Image (cartoon, rainbow, N blue to C red; front, side):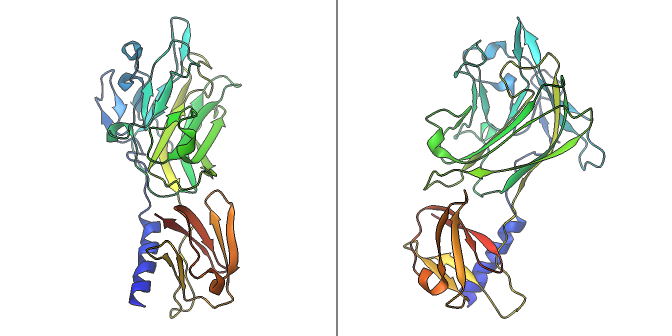
Length: 309
């Protein structure tokens, strides 16, 4: 019982110390006051790679125009800019931009995670249910800004997602939003988990842009961004009976071990994308072998996530 209790405590602690994106409130900045200014842990054009990176201009800066009630003093401002007749969208990403072509829709233009460089990648080894952020978008009434988040395995995933990146995508959250009438608006976007089996979260590639269409919009369209947060809804098992403990874990052979359940208790096991793996009684699921990945285990009292290495 001691080992079981330890497992339950660890499971509950996970919900309290859930991973978040570094500098998600945009309080910290690098090269502040110069044209190289970027929020710490984020990047934009001035730190881009690619053959055209020398033509990059500043399109992100620190702003004090935070929303009422914000806990911080600053937010990030990105804006679009017209250069030689080409509209460059404002972009902010946890990865790195690659500027490879003057044709804005070219596959040589993308954002990507640089796995060996923490400045251009964001580690994430948990499975959030949604992403929340605040934005204030100023543009023509028909325009739409964008937020795109990719949770992925150990691979230098690109956004837009190419054929090489697709097999490594664990989950995706995507939203396009209209101008907010000069007011701050809260957005909550669920993660959709893919059918790619055997994957585990290792990184998140998150990108904001002034327009979801490359080259779309007008000069000086802008988005203010603040307080990005990953939301974890599923919690561990609990019981009103303080003497009743439930344990769900795996052995060295990735076989399921259930403790504290009645033999006839109905349990369902899902992949994170909602696909049902198996549903049966607790006694029938003892020793059930699970492949590598994240799962949701559901019982009548609650549900919890389980990671199988």
